[in-house]
Amino acid sequence: MEQTRHYATGKRKTAVARVWIYPGEGRMMANGKPFDEYFDVDTARLITEQPFAITNTLGKFDAMIKVKGGGKNSQSEAVRHGIALALLLVDEGHRIPLKKAGLLSRDARKKERKKYGLAGARKRYQYSKR
Image (cartoon, rainbow, N blue to C red; front, side, top):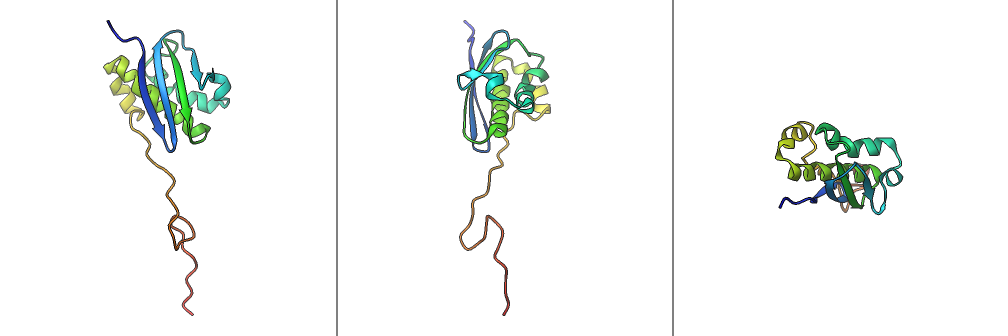
């Protein structure tokens, strides 16, 4: 019997998205809310639907998403990463278009921590010779 629900974890900065996708009509829930209500900005919705659009599976899968950490933009990119990884589990043939679009690699950039003796992560206090 083939598994009907596929799970993947997407990450971006400090945001972590747990994504479950299963065959359906394209309904998505994020943290117990309707998708349009949780991601109220159009660009965030477009970002998260990219993997479905690239693989021509828009409207073929329902998704249940739990996301935490980061801001809304970072969360939407984490969800995009999770959906792309979950689509790979559905069909390995999706790898080439998703890889070409750069959706399978995690964007690992994070804020660099402040170091002691410095004004910020890299900024130094003004040097005075005398």
